[in-house]
Amino acid sequence: MKRQNQSMTTEFLLRLLFVAFLPLYLFTLGTNAIIVSTIVLDRALHAPMYFFLAVLSCSETCYTFVIVPKMLVDLLAQKKTISFLGCAIQMFTFLFLGCSHSFLLAAMGYDRYVAICNPLRYTELMGHGVCVGLVAAACACGFTIAQIITSVVFHLPFRASNQLHHFFCDIAPVLTVASHHTYLSQIVIIMLCALVLVIPLSLILASYIHIISAILQFPSTLGRYKAFSTCASHLIVVTIHYGCASFIYLRLKSNYSSSRDALISVSYTILTPLFNPLIYSLRNKEFKSALRRAAGKTISLPRC
Image 1 (tube, rainbow, N blue to C red):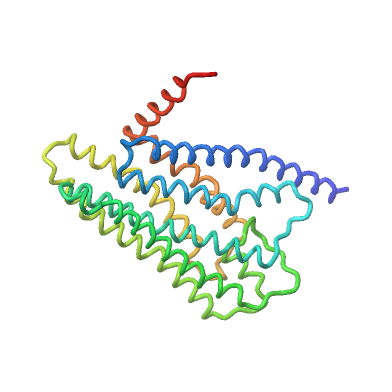
Image 2 (image 1 turned 90 degrees about the horizontal axis):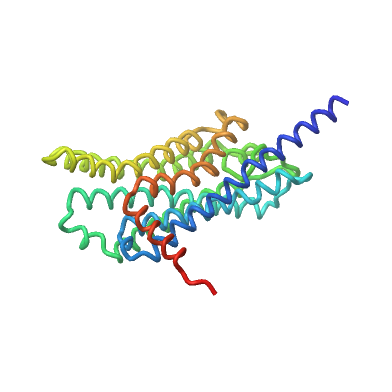
């Protein structure tokens, strides 16, 4: 009787989570779709900063698509399973998008550096070819690192039957169900994760040292405020992304806690993709003006 009551309570909580997460996921998809379409359709937003924002929104959408739909299905399913190949593909895709995201944030930091420290050459230094090249380089780095980490993890021997105490195939939960893995494999994975986090973050910090130095030399308080406000959104997103990622991925297996890590994983797989586009768009007057123009055009369209 007690076990039956526990089962009913668990089922109720899972359904409650489904009801909570589904609207958040749909809202994330809708928000990112609005941001991308507004940037594409409004010529006033055809600038490097908004190009990177559109790529970021696409990345966030794909990022959630890899994890959240499967998680929502599992919340309602009696039998929660994923194949070995499916788990490997999920890990690779998740790592590819996550690593690319880190390098993309560094590219966005460089964009802010050029805009504030070298405004007269901004159009020249941040041309369309340069922007596309930075995004391509971010994706190439993400693809390479994701491929190496996934290969290291899934070449380990696994037990015949594995129970993953997590809602997706992340590195640490998968390593816990490996029947054997060496200390060296852990070090290799941590070093690669550190590479993804430390190099872009160092580039971002270097950019902001120059940015702050340049802003402090502005003669007017209003000019300094405007310059800082254009960087505030990026700094908030950088803090959230690197803070969560550092806590999760720069640790050995012995420090892994399934319940704690699952809670933090919810924040960067569901909440962060929801808040990041909002942080960028709602703090940006130019984007809000473009959104109002787009909404006005939609309302004024003639009806049949």
